[in-house]
Every structure is written in C-alpha cells, then in structure tokens.
Image (cartoon, rainbow, N blue to C red; front, side):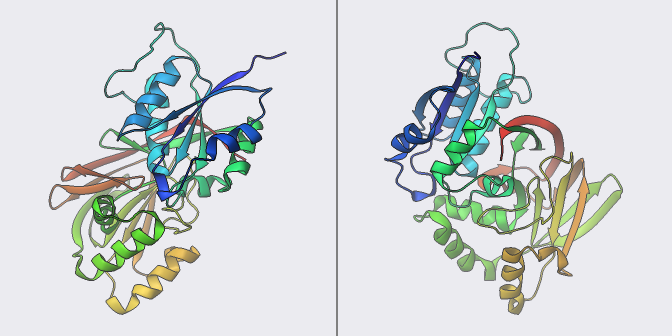
Length: 313
C-alpha cells in the first residue's frame, strides 16, 4: 500500500473579500483522508504564502494547495519552484531538513479570489468542495511559467492600463470584482497610452499601446479573455498589444474581452514567442498575476517550459 501524501493548505483569509471560516470543515468533508495527511496555514502578510510554501517543500510535503486568488497562487507556486532551484528564493526558509535533492511538490488551487484567472483557464472548479475533490484524483500536468525581469508569473503579466489599475485597486478600499471594475471605470478616460519598443525573435517594432500583456494563460480572471487560445503547456507566451482606441468603443472592447473576441479587433496585435524584450518610456508599474510591482524601463520576458506540476482535471 502506498504511503499517504502530505498536503498543506495555504489559506489567504482576505482573498476575494470572502469569508473562509467554514473552509476547514469543507476540506475535512471532501478530502479523501485515506490518501492524505493534511495541515492548514493562514497567511498574515504579503509574501507569507511564498515562505509557507517554501518551508513546506523543504519539509517534504507532496502537495501545497493555494487557497486564494491568482496572487496567492503566484506566491505558493514561487515557493515550490524555489525549493527545486527553478527560481532563486528571496529570504530563508524555516524548517529546512537536509540539502538533498527531492521531487518537486505539486501545486493545487482552491479558487477563492476576485478573478481566479489561472483556475478558470485550467478548468479547476470554482466551487470549493469540487476543487477539493479534484485533489483526490491526484492527476497532475506540467505547466509553463513566465518570467519578467526574474519575477515569475503563471497567468498574465503586463504593463500599461492593466498594470495601472492593479496599483489603484491594491491601494483602494474595495475588494472583489466589483471594486476592480469601479477602479477601471474611474481611470480609463484619463489614462494616457505609452510608447513601447518591442523586440521579438522576428525583429523590433515600435508600438503606441493602451496596454501590453504577456499571457501564459488565456484570461485575466472572471472570464475576461486577453489571449483567447493561449496555452499554459505549449512552451510559448502570448504578447498582446492593445493599441489606443476611441472612447466611444469602450463598451465594444469590454464586450470583446468578456466574450473571447478581443483577438478579432483591429486594435489588437498578438504575437507568440519564447522571449521578448519591452522597452518603455519610463520606470513604472507592472503587474504579475494581477499583483502590482514596480520595474524599470526595460522588461525582459521569457518562458520556462513545463516548470511546475499542477493538479488539473
């Protein structure tokens, strides 16, 4: 009889503005206890999920489940990758036992955020009970990872309007999808597009753009498809350049985004590749899986194919 697998649930209690007080009970009711030993850990600050995940990987946990949104998934996945040398860790891990090489822990996702873009793309159920029962099947796939200036992303990263909104949203009082939409509606009319010099494997282009998104998965979240047809398992990233468009076309562009038809707009340019270089006018905001960050003028982006194991349907 095979040994039980060790599973850690890393729970972000504030993700998506949802009450998670009943989650441990739901896990206990739906997880197959004949297959798993499991524990819980709750995040208390930014980067805590990464540190918890990294510690769990050092301690030999087989699976680390991110209970939260895409930001929580990003932190947990970074911790898993750091343990096996796929990504250099920042900070130290507690509980390190030995220095021998070990098999990489798998990532599981219990979607509990505002958008849940990666979970939606992978087909992971949004219902917590169903997502937990999916873990029981122990079916895994290898997923690509994007890197922007040495920082990993797993769903979508970008510069431009989406990065601007991620900063506004992070400092605002509201959470959830409605708060994000309200932030976007407030900011869109006054936002100024920027100039970008973009180098791909085929050459260099100059573009004036409303946003420049780099997609590993197909959507931001909430079924807002910035890169319909993108795959997390093809060894490529999708570079999506949305050129400036007239204000009267805002409703049309929003509809295209929500119906997976943004690629058919004449304002959208989509390129695929293993690496890109983007040079913008100034240092400024970017986002990595919806989480804000500040980076310099030059953004170097590359894909790391099949770099993390994730539980999928």
